[in-house]
Length: 317
Image (tube, rainbow, N blue to C red):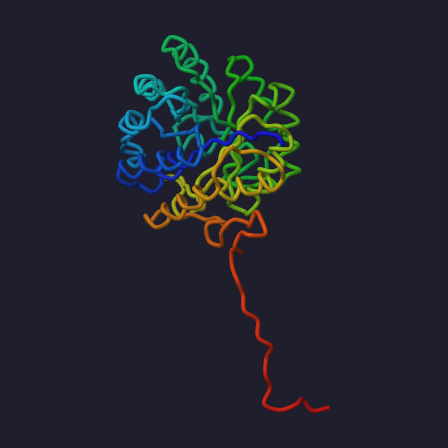
């Protein structure tokens, strides 16, 4: 049985679009730790007027930091990088978009300008003693534009190699990819970095998330991002599905496929239902019907009673 490493991103992805009290965020992380999660993208250090749901990033870091946990965050500029380092984040991931229109709308720079900024931030991060990585948002296409593939990734990958940033999060932010497209882009990425050093984040906008997670595990990708209850969104894209692939659905599929996630599926389901009961919108399947029974003694998720229909008279010939 091969081990698969899952990183939980709901504390950042969900609450950037659905603000909740700080204490609920803290309790979510505590519940997820109880379920076996040890790696989190906890928040973003960005302008609070633009993303008010994550204005409490420092407070959340202070409350949940503990031995054995890996706590990362997103940043868009030097101010965010310095705030992340001051909060004790283990790593900061720069928000680089492969889509030019979204890049300008999200952080006010083109993709090329963002790569230049990342190069400058790499020197700052070295001085601060914090690991710096980068997203490649919309690596497979979107949010409204056409599909992207290896040809579009190549110039970005080459520039990242020149900068010396080797911690990449390739994100299918609009859920464009099916397993063949996942394979094609990762085959190209493997010419630049070993797959076991990559993080891949697939979103479930079009229902392909769990299938893609199984493909990523088969390929040996180092880290797969998941989001509890399939929750998430983006403040710049209101009304659109922006959830990551559902943690509990992904965990069940991986285990049934023979992979070891190290997670307590029942505890994940309980926490996903708790989050939904708190009013946070989400998706997912397992939390509604229960996990697949693991033994003959386990109760079925649903029971049905079938009664043959009765007829008042025999059908005529």
